[in-house]
Length: 397
Image (cartoon, rainbow, N blue to C red; front, side, top):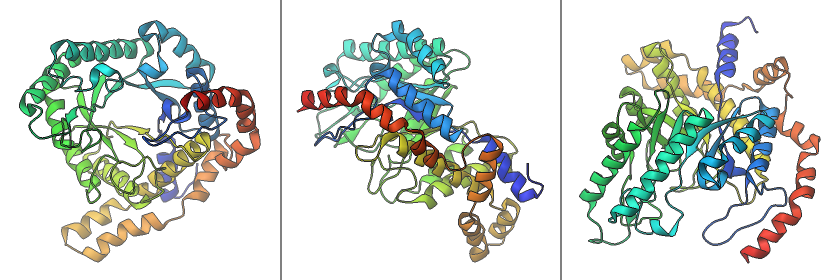
């Protein structure tokens, strides 16, 4: 542990920072236009956990894996023990549970917002089953994203759909254990292009409050219009005690799936800064779940997860270095240049030497990506999974 106060603060932040991996980020995925197969991509749930365990082994900061129930629990509740076994085998925990109420044909016109009561009930039952899976896996967060909306004016009763969402979320909340939370996500468009039922943070906030006290808002950094000030959204949600978690990625336009920090690392830094500034002012830690939500078609999947996790760690560490007391003084006096320089100085600081020292002290490689590449894991996975992935490509074609 370093002796200088500045490095002590940085070291403490490194000890505290953790970011969750998405199981689906290790499997082959595509766009609406095509799918590009990788030989080393995970082909089943066990392989996803094996890959996630490798990322955690290399980085030391990714101890849990978010799961998608239809994709990772093919038998629903009957799959729970099997998936828990994979997690234990590869040294990671099961994190957020993600229901899937957008994939099946019955959800063509929506899930909780569907005009048909039996379809709304089916969607609700799936969410309730996911809550039960979360209880059995020890998962705290149930992450809810809905594709519900409409594509043409006049084709949906928006007020009715809002009411049905309130009813479904309230019933879901009633089935939570005392330690579980509902995280309500939002997205301005896609796949619904006229109206989306939960289109922004205000709608998500109102629905979370309607659901109950253990419901919070989930912010995805890609789910905003281009000019949106995401850190302002973060600050408002923090002030309302309604920020529950993040899905981190990066964007060029609205909802891109780019590697975190690849387009605008300063934005991620500013988000972390607002969270840490809130903690400094209030004297309490914000209870926020950080998670990666990326699935890349071109980059090597494990390598991009390592790249993302270490980038998040670096940007969080930089945000730790903002002098909050000095910043507060400059803000109070409207000293604009000096206040902005507080942020820019921290962002410009090279924290990598301290991070390398921290990794070495924790028994980790100083360079996680280099350690992964030297391990031979990618080559072995490619050899083991190549034929299965080639077969899936033939099936896809």
